[in-house]
Each structure stands twice: as structure tokens, then as C-alpha cells.
Length: 340
Image (cartoon, rainbow, N blue to C red; front, side, top):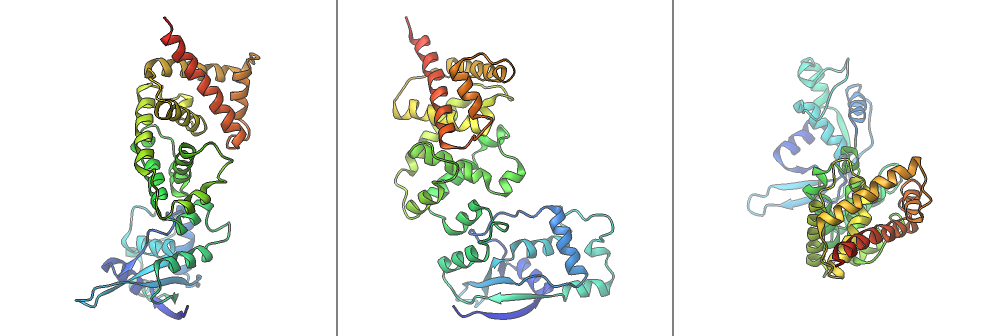
């Protein structure tokens, strides 16, 4: 790979973003993860005239009729985006006391900001897969990207898309299951992928199976439509259970096994379950789990479930045991309802 180094002024980068000639976030880049404190510290570096590490770009699409081309930011999205937010006074950036907005700078200070030189490494014309690999290697250290963000740089196949669509389902927003920080660090994507893999196979240890499945289904995912339909049916059944807003059902560790076990019963085994009956029984069980924390009953199932929600919650054994207990609660309620 032949690369070239050059310096560009901030004004050239800002102009490129505003014209669309620079794409600040190709689909393989991570979500924005800088806090406001990070952005302000970075802007101080620029306004004081200190250098920051080089950014990487690659040649993008070219309009063959107009000869207008684009470039992709392979690495440097957060830095360039922060510069643009400062320049346009974006609401996504809050300046702390003592830092003046761009509009309040003197003409000389504005010129200094716009003419600040940024080191740019141009990768030239390279394919998407090469770009992904460069991005992965640049950000391969643990302090830069988390595992899911690295996976996102390498895999954009149908399984990944299916998991992302599930993670972004409005159902999770309505029940406030992910914080803004979790979404920024793609923890919702990890959760969506965990759901899909458990639906395809069984419970697994923490995030051990994520990359193997992403790689296996990076070209084709034959179960795509089936998994989406099963998730939708199970999601709607859980909604019909009418769990209260503060139910354990909306805690991620509890929801995972509830959804997986209901998927098996409804979609794989064809059980005809009554949502009201199951919802009441499961919520009563959750209440008893809460009491188990302060008044141990000695009940083996309550003890097993309670222990797996307070220690090693994402270990395979904990997930299996929680799933076994919640399945038993569901089936017991179903059998009582079906009894003559």
C-alpha cells in the first residue's frame, strides 16, 4: 500500500465536510464516543496551537461526468467532527467557562484557527476491505476501541444488520433498556447480537461467540427472515404480558432469558401461551426474587435465579440456570391454566 503525507488546514477540512466532499463517518467507523470534556480538551489543543496525531483519509467515489470526487475519513472522525461542531456552534458541544465560541474570537484568532495545520495520511485509492483492515489495525489497542467497535469495523454482513435492527427496535427505547452511553459504545449492538445468537443456538459465555458468528454469516444469513419474525412475535408477546415499568423484565440480564425461553416455547415448540397468565406468573416470581434478597426462603429455584443476577451474570452457566428457572415458571403457569 503506497501512502502519502501532507498537511491540510482546518478550513480545508471544514469546507470539505460542508460541501460533502469529505465523508466524516463511513459505515465501518465507530459511533461517536467522545464526551463533552474530551471535545473541549481537544479544542484547547488546537486553539493553543499544539499538534495532534495525524488523521487518515482514502479516495472515495468520483462523479465521472463532473469529475467531482469525495474522500473518506478512515480515522479521525471524532477530531474533525469536533472541529466542525465548534465552527458552526453546534448544540452537541458545550463550551466550559473561559473557552470562547468561534464567533467571539477576534479576526486574527479565527484566521489562526482556520489555518491550523493538520497532518493527513492519504491512503489513496484502496478497496473497502483494505480500508476496514487499516481502520481495525489503527484502532487495535484496547484503550481506543472496544471489541464491538472493532467488530463493526470488520463485519457488515447480514447477521450484523439483523442484530443492529433488533437492537434499534423501538421496543427497547420505550422501556429505557439502554443508556445514551451504552448506545454510544455500541453495547446495544452487543445485546442485539447476543439475542440473535442465543435464538440461533443456545446461551454462551459473555461475548465469546460474537466474532465467530459475525464471520460465519458475513456473506449470507439464511435464517434472517425467520429470526426477525420470531423476535417480533416474542417481543409482541412480552409486550402483551403487561409487565409494570419497574419490573425485572426490563433489566437486560432478566430480559435476555425471558425472550430466549419464550422464543423457544412459542416459535420452536409451538406452545399456545396466554400472555396475561404468563405475565402475572413471571411478575409474581420476580417479586419473590426481590424478597429473596432480604428474606431467604430456601427455595432452590429462587436461590438459583437470585444468585445468577448478582454474580457472574453473563457467564454461560448463569444464563443457562436463569433460563431453566424462568422456563419452569412459564410452563407451570401454563399447565395450571390448562388444567381442567
